[in-house]
Image 1: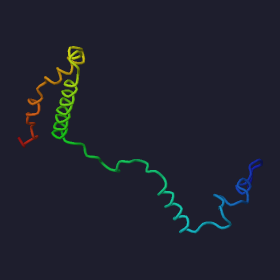
Image 2: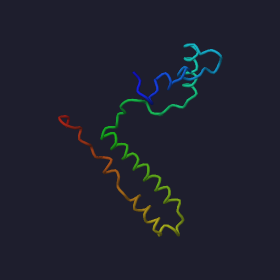
Image 3: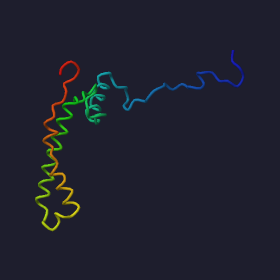
Image 4: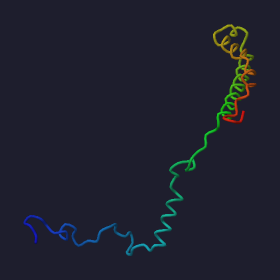
Length: 121
């Protein structure tokens, strides 16, 4: 029983089939669709560069040793910069800051033995 003013489902959709119209005279076979899909995957850029999954963060001792190594490398770079400065600019603010960095004793920090953790000391 139809109420007045409401059309049937068939009248709304019409007689044309739903979905995308084929590009050619016939629809693609499953193998053709799969080949197109794989080609599209090869051409498309990856959504992300890092691998999917849980990434392990370095332990505290690993991070400590990396930081100490970076500080020692930076101190050596600043020492080279200080040596390359002309004598006239060594008394400037930049020269004094470089001298302060070079004078830091990072060997004491590098010699620190970190605790190994609960029950392993």
